Length: 73
Length: 137
Image 1: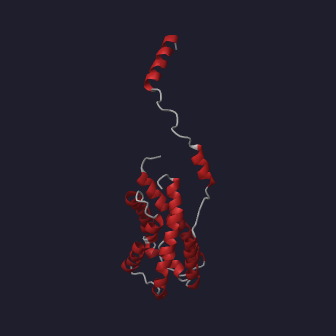
Image 2: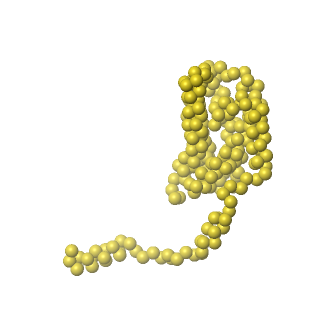
Image 3: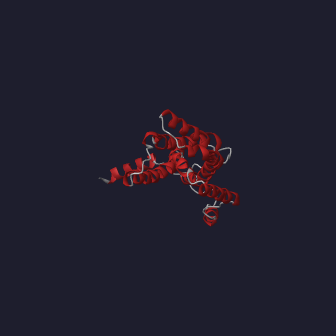
């Protein structure tokens, strides 16, 4: 490829890929990322624990319902 | 990542029942064919195999389409799904002439609230997690 062809190719590439405008971020994303990393993976409130315990107790009292539950899951 | 959110919602919805079905069917196959225990649910297995996962997927699509923007609880919405699935499952057993053991009718008043609780928790934590991972939470 000659020097002239290389220059033409560069010119065509520059034309086909215009320079990005506003390439800089408008705000710093790192603090939000740090906050998200610091959060616990799962926060389960006490009423969900209570519901889970109640369901477990009923299933233990009536184990015959397990197949019926699995049938609908 | 913003493309096809309803497809991602559908896939997130069907993931949990598909995995559970695999585990349940493995256990059932062992019980039925290895230990020869007569539990002939082959006739009605179409309901958990086909209807339930699709219902989960479509339920999640409905949530994303109508309720996610209003910040309605995913757990409460998912917890309401057994109110459709329980009659649907019963209807399938009746249509296919499957004899449901009488014990099932006796425990139904307890099983339905337990089902609602299980669905509420699974939707809130597991489907919610998948929705967040797929960027549609």
